[in-house]
Image (cartoon, rainbow, N blue to C red; front, side):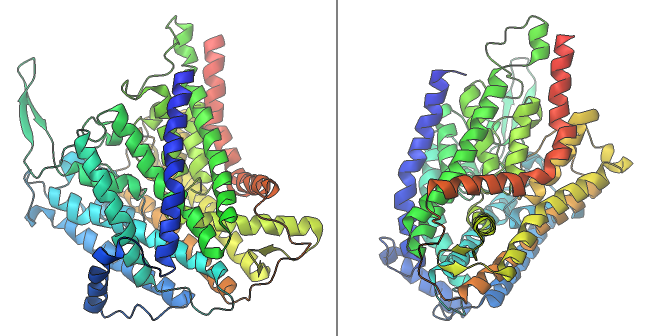
Length: 569
């Protein structure tokens, strides 16, 4: 580790922090129905969409109607993307004449982009046409992120309102998230990506002659536009198999910093939006503080683990001063690679600029744990916020147990129904991740896809299902996931991680929204204090992570011990 490295990390995070407050307040005005500086330009277009779709923007929905609208919209998106992938061989903008995608892979990919996971069991540059990349994947990058924001706004209104039977209108929230938030930001970031050297073209692949005289095909396409929303929407799916390690997707240290900034910006601003809408901006800062504390700890641990180098190589006399550089790009360096690793998994982004399978055991442990904690640090666009609200409810419940009071959060009493829904949501990830991992660890067909045996092989399986259920999308790439078993089971895990989680959260929001807000009393636990932040961090670590400790002990932790023992003896 070096001072320069820490300064690079600090500058990047400071730039994110500078954008959080204005963006968070802007989104609060937008979703409270107030006019913003973009309304003169975009409101006619917004009204046109409502008229065309027959939607009354003034008609609000209860939690069941809101959730049903989300499920119907998601189902339609899945069907459209699945058909595009299956039929891409006869669709336009296919300069490479790539055929349609196989049924199991099309199912996995459609579910992946629908759920904001962007798990990719294929090489994008050789498997998908430009039409599939743009009309299929990029469109879902916008819509899946907008859906997450819409759900977060519904949960926010449950606390902002008193005795309300409705939580807003899904179609309005989703439209506004797309038109007023994601599209303008993607336009700006996309142009910045082009300026930094990311290609944006509809041309066919380039043919080049190498120094040895061989012919090489270099894939190009509409990359800058995809890169922008891929990061802003915490989607993560890359145009290339190498993702953000590819020089066309991420050509320089500046584009790398821009990518990290774009990944963090919207998710980090949403807690401020939450605070403004519930009438306590300090509450938003308290939630963001808990998110940031755990994320920075993750960055520090990855940086330390990777900068310390590989003890096996050091034992052979290799200079450890550069650290573990396997699977990394020299143009990014250890510090910004470590920041990218922690950010992409603390979020539910899944973009990678290093190969996670090549990380040191403890370096690989961190992204796995950040996913398993619930993708709330700061989590996916929208999903991180409502996931964090679930942990806040559990934290005040624990505090209430300690002092013998009925727990309250933002003026709403937390009772048995709310706790049942919160616990149900928290149990989804461990049930899906550990269930599918244990079954796969026993099946010869699944084990045949592993590139490594022993603890690292278990880590590859555990990471795959953690990434799928957590809607992250990154991978330990030693696993060959393009098989019927993995395409199917990972697709199911993605759906359960998104929809089985959000339905109890919406039921929780409906229950809380119907309750009247009560004034704080002398005995009310202050949820904007450092004490609450500490309690919240503890609840996340215990309830979000303790279930996975035995599996982690058999995977990356054992691998770390064995590696150092081998280097010593």
